[in-house]
Image 1 (cartoon, one colour):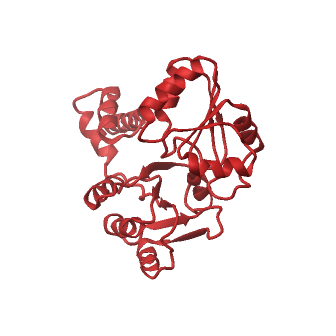
Image 2 (cartoon, rainbow, N blue to C red):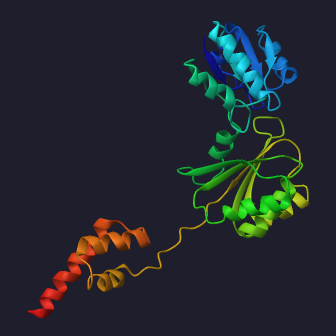
Image 3 (cartoon, one colour):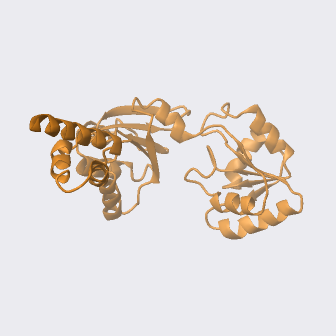
Length: 280
């Protein structure tokens, strides 16, 4: 009675771990996003385990049925069309329900387009924000991009070949033509392509078909620069110390500016000492 969440190759079939193959051969059932698509992979590795459909349109009912089967002792592996399940793919309901019923959920790691693209992006990876797919409608897409405009971490998203051109142009409009972006498509496949540049350059590249509108895209956007503080902490502390004790003044200014209480308290003590010296 276990649920295995198994990553599958995102393109190159050699990117399939020995452990993943072993697990898929050993379980009683494989829940696949698209059984026809997954059957090719199964045949390539001689995996004869039965497949059952598990996708966006049957996720709720299928999750309940699969958990019921696991409660009877069935071991099940969850796979998506490519890459790691649940990363912009179905599976959340099944994992959540299995956990709530005390069924062990075991990750079998492997390929992920998100991580593969980020590793070669040339953009900071110490902090990144994954936002999945942008909305398909332009107004909603621009609204979402506007909400991300001041995000300082690297932003990672997926995009389809049908919308990549419009999305890049919307990014240039909302985020600014100078924002640096890396675009990867068809990762690990024969026509893999990764291109980096300012949004103005990438818009020209896709309009000129230098970026081919085929396959699945991962888009990584340089974070916005950190905003410099506009607060004069010393002046604020000086004004509040006329009415409040140092610790309370430091707390108030910390809430307003986000500066640490300790730093502000040290400023308060420094101002108090300086005032004492002047009065001597």
